[in-house]
Length: 102
Image (cartoon, rainbow, N blue to C red; front, side, top):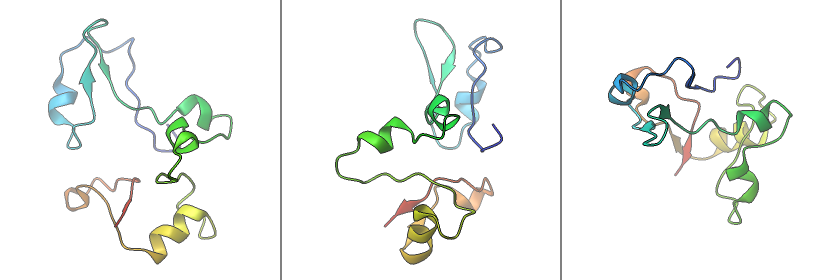
């Protein structure tokens, strides 16, 4: 999507599983019922309405955050700037937009 969310088009997927093999994050799985590949879509339907992903909304420990990293005044940009963080496989040049605060 324009926001950087990677989606799988179930209408085009025929279950070859090459994308599962190629995904450096091991984030894709084959649905045994539909025989198509699935992955977290970050609740893109909620993002389109200006809402946060459900995992962020329901996390009682407030261990998950969502926001605009390009907005220096946003909560996530502040957290990444002020705390130690890491990106998975940043050395691969994939520039993931998911940061883990350490």
